[in-house]
Length: 261
Image (cartoon, rainbow, N blue to C red):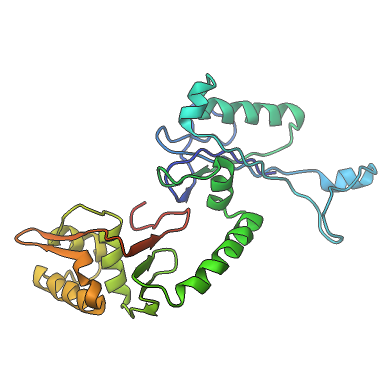
């Protein structure tokens, strides 16, 4: 059985660490993040069948129900307004499950979304936890946008698909060039020094490039951005910065880039 509770704040799905006083498999709710709580539960499907209990609706022949997921959308501010906390909600649901079905096992996970993501809390939670129906609906909605993407004007930086379109044409960035641009985009308006770029974009096992090499990567990136190259600014003596322009559109899934989270 799965149980999910999630508030909303920063986009990646993450399993929370353990809660202090939780039973069996404790879960902790990050104090500053929106969370979704997921709980796998074992269900006695064979026993139900033997007693003649009705099958769960919409379960195809040849399969058996092993549990369920309950998506709960609420952020920390709303929980406080209701006189509770995310932690208390999770514990109450765990206690109820133990009371109704003592043999059930539960597991809680936290769903995070970017601050100010907008939309209904429960919809954000479903997307963050990769609910198939929610993902299918999102793909349908993106279909019309994809058609519009073929010949748009301006820059589209699609972080979820790892691509950059310039006036509808792919910019053809290398993996490292995209990683570099993405790093700057996710820290919009902040000047990033060369040392931070080296530490963040090159693994410890790799041969670390020199600061001059970073300049070469940035130069190549800017040349591929063509007449939009000024979105990547050079701050003399410090490093580089991404500046948003009116003709730049940034697309990101509900789950944030692992680069940042």
